[in-house]
Amino acid sequence: MSNGASSLEHDPSAALNKPTREQSRWLRALAGVARLPLLIASGAPLLGGVLLVAQAWLLSRVLDAAIVGHAPREALLGGIAAIAALMLLRACIGWAGERAGADAAERIKRRVRQALFGRLVAQGPHWSRSRSSGELASAIVEQVEALDGFFSKYLPAMGAAALLPVAFSAALLPVDVVAGLVLLVTAPLIPLFMALVGWGAQGASRRHLRAFARLSGFFADRLRGLSTLKLYGRAEAEAQSVAAASDVLRQRTMSVLRIAFLSSAVLEFFAALGVAGVAVYIGLSYLGFLDLRFSPFTLQAGLFCLLMAPEVYAPLRQFAAHYHDRAAALAAVGQIAALFDGLPEPAPHAQAAPPAAAPSGGAAALQARALALEAPGRAQPVLNGAALALAPGEHAALMGASGIGKTSLIEALSRLRPCQGDILLDGKPLADWDEAGLRSRVAVIGQRPHLLPGTIADNIRLGCPDAPDAAVREAAARACVLDFAEALPQGLQTRLGSRGHGLSGGQAQRVALARLFLRDPGLVLLDEPTAHLDAATQARVLDEILRFCQGRTLLVATHAPAVAARFGRVFRIAAGKVTSP
Image (cartoon, rainbow, N blue to C red; front, side, top):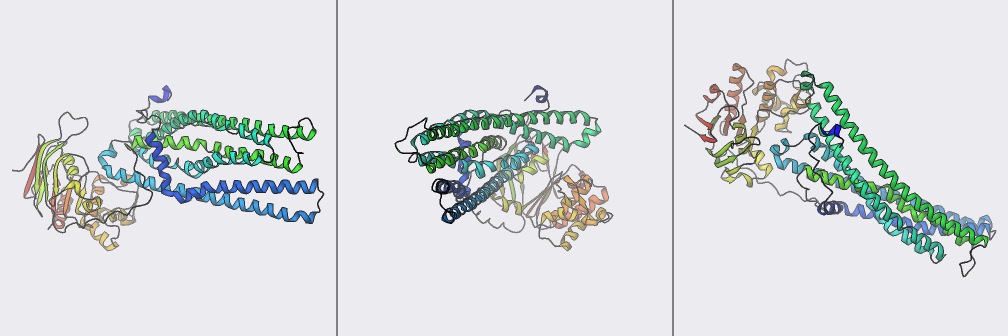
């Protein structure tokens, strides 16, 4: 990147190197996801090429009969009809091949996006917080989209470019050896020089995707912090930074276009050279200046050679037009591998997930032993040899100073943060629980709940998507959401912006708590559920939480003594240990 843009922020893709062999093999292995459509897309140009030879031969024959043989028009109608039928059939085959290629690309992109999203979910929030959300979104959307041209255009064109020029040249050899040899010698030069150009194209595409991913993450982060930037008077400076990053992307885009035009120039030069060579040879032969044949050069033979000469290079032109799709796809794969710490395993066929074991009903038992947890930037571990045990149906509070590790412990107990040690849920290691079973058994509400764009009712219904309106309203009442929602013009149908824009911190917390009342977990883990509430609302919400958790196991992280006093047992975190008086 230029010096002017390199100072904008750290570029996490700077370490991205050329795609490895594993990445190239992974890209090729994705073809197994849509094998049949790709076979149709690759076979359509080959079948069309066979029909093209027949069409050119018929056309030259009809013209020879009309010009040299002076055949009547009625005698030519059969040949003309056959030519029209071949043209229509080739058009249909071409359309079917394009549709099959597009279908194959869509299948593959959908499978890759599902795999990447699955990895994103499996890695958990702790992993995703360490990465730019804009770059992750760009990888799942834009980078995966870069695979489209590779499968829908490049692979079919590659097969046609590898076989058809040689096949067309071989078809000309029985008609005229010289014309066939001229095309057979010049056609292979094009892929050779295009490969040389392609090395530069792949590097330019890789730099372009780096700049695009960087700009996506850069812009998303600035947009998220726009209010803070305005508050501190940094809006104008950041606007200039975005403009500088955009200029870097423009330069990378122009670099890719320059190489694309260079590739086209190489192709057109050799194609023009080959076609011109055949045309000059045929013209001089007709004029009598060249006599390299053992038999007379008929008009039909000359026309057939002239008609087929441009077609020898047509597959190469098509291949050149989509050659940059390969470079873009390889660069995108490298970017995805860097952002997601590797590539998901491609599966040729969708495999049904094994049925999740039904979680045991009733209150859950929780036991943690020898927990060790570290946090980036902290010299001392957050937890070191901590232990905690909750009997089924037990209610307990977790106390400690701010930043002591209450949130980290809650996240570790719910498998949202990696840690060392043993955590048993219902006597079963936490790592052995399948994701669906664990999330059904354990309910977690953090300090900063996630609210999505939509109505308040929609955000509550995330706890149970099939919940009827009456149940949603009851949950909202229990969480004291109706206290503020009924004052809004549309009540629970009031739409919220991104990240719950339009609600205060305490109101967002209550919406998240309302989700809890739509579920039936065995273990409830709450992190400061009443931190933003006044005393009266705090007491009401806490009453509803305790009422809901009768017959369930409950652990509440809090720093408020008034909240902890409502629980029969209190755990305290100090010096990396968890103690219970």
